[in-house]
Image (tube, rainbow, N blue to C red):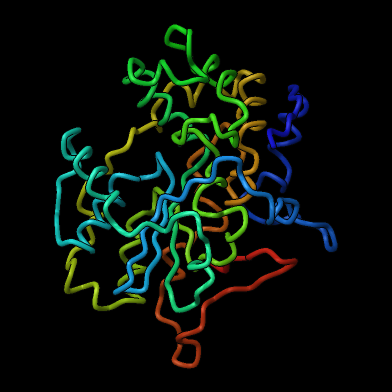
Length: 314
């Protein structure tokens, strides 16, 4: 892992103009493998992480990645499984949620449950660059005293974002802190991406409730109101960061972001475009796809596999 791409001004112009990095999906030539089809489906991460719970009563597996609305998803899981509604808008509340969440039935390192079609399998991911900026602002700018002893940062004064990028490679390595590790190394995405019924973009996290309600109507009795549409995520807002406007002007930073996270950009279908990091992922479920299907199609998962990789219809 850690594919290195030497970026020049010409490369940037070419890369951002090609379908390879476009979320539109247009421009793929017949017989030429899509970028997704070039990724390994068997290679395991040296430090796999599974942040998900098994809800046996609801027959649901719900997985997420660190810095991807994690606290809010943990809060939602606790509400569903224990009835506890703990506010997540304070550090004390978030810490209590993180602690209690660990007592819930975890998916663990065995991915077999993801192969059980009787379960509804959902996961939440985030734009790789927005997630990286959020991790930097939250863990380095705001909490460096806690994270400065991490092996990748040891001996450094508080690093700039560019220095941070240089120190965290490779992002799949076991020494990489989970908040900036590859998302592909969580939730068994490398080997079981195709088994998920829904992949949801973090900015559309309210769809998580809508999807569960559609497939598990009894959820309405447990949680009558969508908690994602009425609360603020306990996550760092990186959309207005100066880093977003600065990084595209520095080819070495573009190069580092790509070499660290190209797998996440490709796997989830995010556009690798420094001038627009607001695009949602190509392979994520969209609100328009949650409309009620005709009777003859109900009960059938809308999955189309080409070349061994999931193509999501949205």
